[in-house]
Image 1 (cartoon, rainbow, N blue to C red):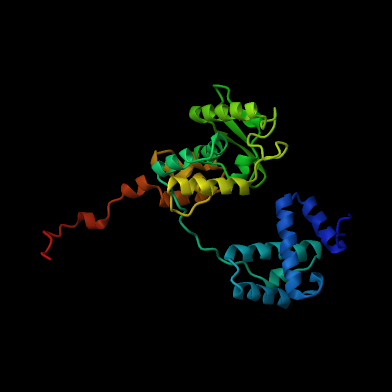
Image 2: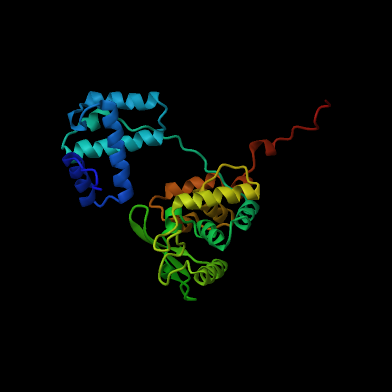
Length: 296
């Protein structure tokens, strides 16, 4: 059985992305978006004009595409036309869409406790605890190796390699978290799923790590078992990490470093949902003496 041949145009785009250091996930996403445009256009995408690209954006909106999906398509098509073809059609034919800024969902500390207790075994409790206790993304949790744990008393850090933006960083490793990871390591090693020097959270085949999708399914099950009805993903635990630290009075610039944010304004959005910050503000109504309440 032979693989389906890749067209010269697609191969050139892949090479352009590879030279610029785009991740495999980004490359797959861009190729998929170009494929979707080609289906709409009905011909080879290099024959499209700026007006064709404008029509495609209208088509996406009329068919209910989200703002994020539309912007992702713009990025892929601008790369294809601007870099691979050396044309500016996508620059003139497409426009990015303003994405509404929403306040993230935050769980209370009691809800987080119930969620962790409802996790299916040590493996998932440890994974969820890392997302909450260290503020890690799903990809960062599953990508951890045993060698990334620095448990020296004067260090107590987690090394996060090539996180978002292709930057390394360190996350804080607390004593309770270390104890939980040790318990999971012992259980995993005893059952034969933990390979020496391998992934902290191995998948069904220990050569590979657990996938974010598998982690999401386990989270959905734990959420249901814990009786939590708020919409959430594993990233919600990262939001909780930042918001709960703000509630404890941790400086927002420290939280920025722990989260790996480049801009302080990205971290500042958690001020809008930190309950202690909101409770500390008095409403102007509190300063008015309105007298006794009128009878019903």
